[in-house]
Image (cartoon, rainbow, N blue to C red; front, side, top):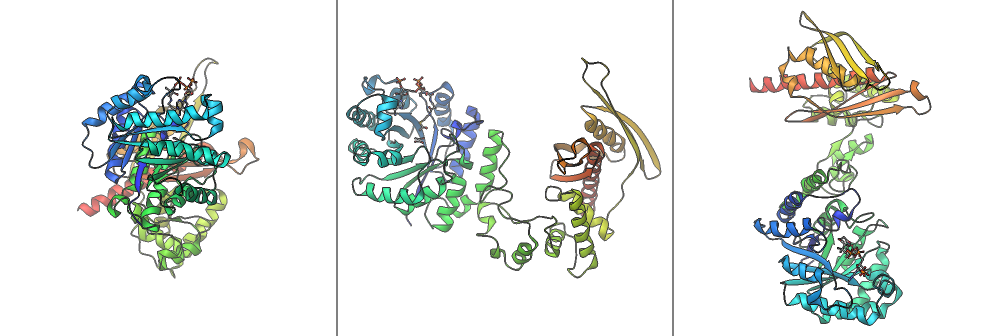
Length: 528
Ligand SMILES: CC(=O)SCCNC(=O)CCNC(=O)[C@H](O)C(C)(C)COP(=O)(O)OP(=O)(O)OC[C@H]1O[C@@H](n2cnc3c(N)ncnc32)[C@H](O)[C@@H]1OP(=O)(O)O
Ligand SMILES: CC(=O)C(=O)O
């Protein structure tokens, strides 16, 4: 299959998503990463919309992009004025982009209701806006807004709007499924009809309101479209745009289209996470191709088979997009899950070893009580070490007390914890305040232990999640606490379950500290 050009609109349509906003500096950093991964066109924003987008087009000129072209977005001119008087068109030219992309109306209903002009006037708007830009910018693309809905309502008029763009010599005419309601089988048929009238290169821009944006984009490529527009992680207005993180591997690996290189594709997961990070959003773990769960195997039958051959339960090698196979531990596990995990932790185990079955039984029994090891791999590693007798006891807790009091109606509650630990032969008794009882306990525990193990100063509590189980027992329910901790080198998860939230938190905190101490000692051992 021949070259398909990728057009990214994360910095424009992506920012039309609820909760997403980028600083100019963020946009510049993302643009650099899009260039690195081989995106051909980067739509930086709408300069006629706001000063931030004007600043982007100024600042991006200072960057040394390796190949990507920068596109500025806008609309056809306003009715009743000429293009040279139109503020939007003038700012597009002043931004000095490599490409201008303007959207215009295809659907006669929109011409009537949104623009409130005649069908004929709209054709003039399209033609003379593009003609004006053609002589002032290196490349000009035309986004035919609501193309598929417009075609279904009035095919003759929809084709006339495309002809106006073609007559003005638009370099690419992009068919947009703006409301995201088009089905893949309709889309392919409509593109075939368009081809009978339009010879200009065609592009596709789809939205995900019917969960068909990626499928529609791939169908469009199958119909000979040469430019695919989308966003990283599918960010975009309403339900989002076509997700380039799914489109890129599908084009390259499944449709064998020329778009980015194999080396560039390996950066896809990193790019996805980078964009989530700058958007200040948690990555979607179930996202195809790049999500944490995309190649995570939970069922024992699956794990057993992928160890014999990964393709039994993986549609492609995860490394091709920079992802990896993961094995999850849960009450759906079999011996294969335990053995795969042991291998990951460099622990020698045999499937016939009674310890394997003991660990399996233990996990199933603990999960029955509410433990969950999928997000608590550090607790699971410690559990294995305990069963194998390789667990090392760095300290013991003799006892702790947590006080949480509110001394006056108007005052904030006050939390304090005291703890007594024993390290070797020495007993340490400390107290600490905290922002809530769990934080106070965490502070007291670290304060007591850091004296003996200074490396614990590196540990940060990154996330703390509480889940009430099972539902229906109100404040007497069991509580599961999941903690995520980290240091300069790694992040790890631990779990605790109890009817008492402090006790559940305490268990997860102890596991986190023990895990860090095991890692630190193992690293020392390697260095010796
Ligand atoms: C399908 C898409 O995603 S298109 C992109 C949508 N993105 C955005 O809207 C984000 C950026 N937008 C903005 O910053 C502002 O909307 C602006 C600066 C562009 C315009 O602001 P305003 O002048 O206040 O207009 P407003 O936001 O109310 O938009 C409606 C106007 O746009 C006009 N308009 C809409 N589509 C088009 C078009 N294709 N060509 C010409 N004018 C258009 C309407 O006729 C209306 O003009 P009127 O008020 O003179 O009748
Ligand atoms: C142009 C555009 O963003 C759309 O039609 O959805």
